[in-house]
Length: 283
Image (cartoon, rainbow, N blue to C red; front, top):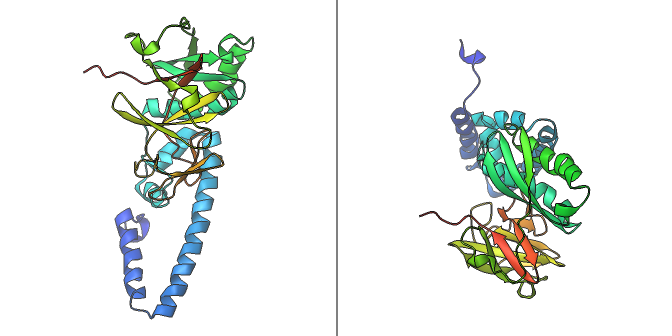
């Protein structure tokens, strides 16, 4: 195989870019200003094109998108534009992304869904709130939750809904050692115009209230993991104080880079109390 037949490696491509950047560094100030403006405009165009391409491909075949990201050059470009964190997120993370996608629709009907267990190729979920006893709950599971999970996780072939646990109104879930749902705070303590930062089981969390519903996320920017609780909140949009990444608090969607939403945790509001589901440490 000749050099002309061989595809360049990521190292070679970056080395070529660096060579031209070194040449440009010798130019005068006015030339460099024009070059940098052109570079920013081209990068904005390329990033928008990649975002649209990712959205389109993901609708048809998420597995094809993951295979493409395993190529070092494709992955390098996606990383450059902050469009991917890893070539293959863990299964549980992908399931949570799928649930986060359908959660806003369920919450609009005072319902929700949470992950119960993973036993390949099966996933067990729990429909809660109005979704647990709605006559259309079976349709909700198959048409919404199941489709989203299978789209994010092709290796999952079956999604099963388990029954919602019934707790007496006077029972404090934080005292139930068999449950990983823990009472965190009261609904009245969660602001609607800002976020509430709390710590639970060694995790730093932020909570946001939408009417009578509450969402909970890890207090970490998906970009570089910086804390978010000091960020500005305006019209339901949280801006990271470190690098200005923006998140829609209702859904956890990253408006700056849609491929890296916030890490969410299932929440249930019961009798004015807020419960969050977090796995207890077995150590």
